[in-house]
Length: 428
Image (cartoon, rainbow, N blue to C red):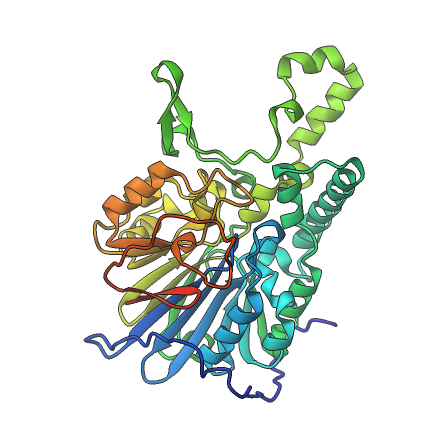
């Protein structure tokens, strides 16, 4: 289906009998300024799905991502989509799809029939998905070709494990992305980059949104890991500092020893390898982490409250804005923080968390230890606990219908949080 930017085509909303009758709902109580906000984190498994409901003079609903990794799927996406539809009355004012990873968008294909019955006003995607942007097309073509080649190689050789899971996450998302690029039901499609700003966003009175990432400068897009001084570290053997819980999709036997490269490669091969390693477009976008770096980072401001949704942004995306005077001001005034990339070691820079206000914000982390057992990492959680008024991990949400769901820490009641059937709400 051809995508027409700015399309405003709509379809008639269809109500589903009985879709609301069995759902428990947490309605925010109004704050002193007459508005209220509810953030609902669904427990999808390994993935992200957040529904932000704004209740002021009129109700409005924003869906930020809806996806789950094939190797970390609890199998309840149909129920989640039905709850989204019931909670928003089949009307989503805005969908923000932060980036094209399976664990952020696959729900739009898994529950396509549900979404196609909704009214959707706007869909936001990162500029790297823009079909009219020449650079985006070139980067996406190279990334897709290499991801598919890797997957075919792994399938043919029987290689599995973390490296295959990383490749799976970057492939097979075409139907979801096609739906989103169509506006789902003809909504207006925007491809956004750092610096975009909106007032009364998606015709929601009082909602202001600033887009902080992704940058367009490839020197930022290609930076995946924080420098040593901005990482959470643990103490290793002999008291030396080591990176904590690093996600390494490729085992050590796949990592070349630089000392052996000159011995095992011809001079021509060494030159070819040097070119490949210096080609940001060809190599960097082939990596799972760099697709994360293209995440839309959105700051939602409503009723005097600021909510930060950074998708899976990694260090280059953060660095492009957080070290500016404006960035420091933003981090010092947030009231809700969606922790990036399921709490991995290189998703939330230490300095970013240190700049957040003390005991003035709450957080949510959509995470579980399948298919990657290395997240979330404990030291970041310790700092988060000391800084925030409270936080909830999605793997602490019990799901009666998913008996084999990975178990995180037991849920502990905290101010503002409330459990639902397969979700957790936070009310501002």
